[in-house]
Image (cartoon, rainbow, N blue to C red; front, side):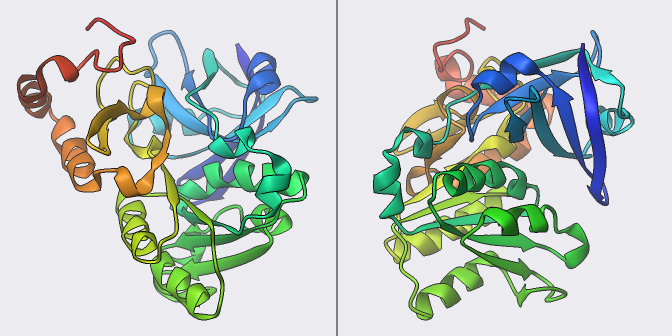
Amino acid sequence: MYKILKKQELTTNIYLMEVEARRVAKSCEPGQFVIVRMDEEGERIPLTICDYDRVRGSITVVFQTVGAATEKMAELEEGGAFHDFVGPLGCPSELVKEDVESLKQKKILFVAGGVGTAPVYPQVKWLHERGVEADVIVGSKTRSLLILEKEMEAVAGNLYVTTDDGSYGRSGMVTQTIKDLVEEGKQYDLCIAIGPMIMMKFVCQLTKELNIPTVVSLNPIMVDGTGMCGACRVTVDGKVKFACVDGPEFDGHGVNFDEAMRRQQIYKTAEGRAMLALKEGDTHHGGCGNCNS
């Protein structure tokens, strides 16, 4: 059992939990995720790692209640426990593989949308701890849905908060803030965008025009988290990939977002899954090479 050390409601329907998971905390890196289950019969839920403490032996996750399983998760309290807490899974951020001195020479921009702020935070924190400054744009529909602002402000070189309705910070979409920063004279060597699929799509359209290489995290489309269900199948540069085993990070300019979003909607129904299985043949399941279903 994996004890819940801390529970906090960040805003309406968005929760933070710190969980004792020493083996995961010992080896995880920014960009990876875990799979949790509340009990033996519970649904497997993939959650990106928001933070970790190797000394305390804990992992912090942030989740939004979007269905029965996450509603049940939100009912857990401090002192309670998860039955399963598996990880680290997925590939770490490419940043952790790069030479720190080389990173210090780069101008890096992070763009976080909604709950995507949670997986952006550990990457920015990792850079900050190594003396690498990065600019961060955090976008939210409205001020009441903004999360982790103080935590992000503590590790970002410059933090730009934007709300769609103009209730706080800059007004408008994150793409407008990117345009504004470039027009103000900012130059970036790399953009890392994490958030809703539609947000990442439009960020990538813009950064392609601006000639800024862009990495996206496709954790929003993961379901099973092991490559077995086929839900997170995506086409990148014309090749079939699975977000949970090949990612979750990919070259954003190579991702077929329209296909991925259409597939997401179709996959939600049994009839849709059957249609995809017929259409995609051998690559529908097992295309990742990690399963035989």
